[in-house]
Length: 160
Image (cartoon, rainbow, N blue to C red; front, side):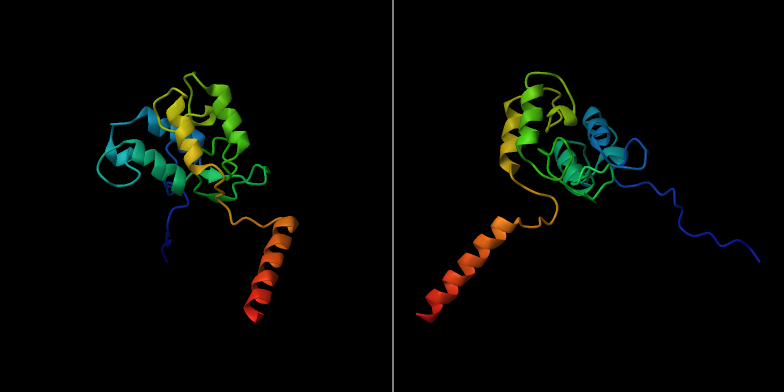
């Protein structure tokens, strides 16, 4: 009777470029530091080169986000403007970008495009995704009330 071996639990996680078992801003920064380098390792979108599109692919497909702040990833795939990786692009991310504006920093500091400097291009990227949420948002009670009122108005209009 021999030992049957299945898939290794040490299989690499796609996008985990530092091998620490998660895909976070460190992995985005590693990718940015390797633009134009080894496509076997750093080509996230499988188009044969390593460029800004690979950063977009990494963030939108693999970057883990923690929407409730408990330190545990709630999902993977967010937006390039989600600098605090909470799954929502909002004023907090704008504040991060503002605080890093004009400085040389990585993803967590507001750099959304791998050019190392937080500038107007990063602001443009953030503004293009501002308000986006990576998770299935649960509507607030006030929102649900507005939806219900709108539905009632439509039903009443349809009967007339």
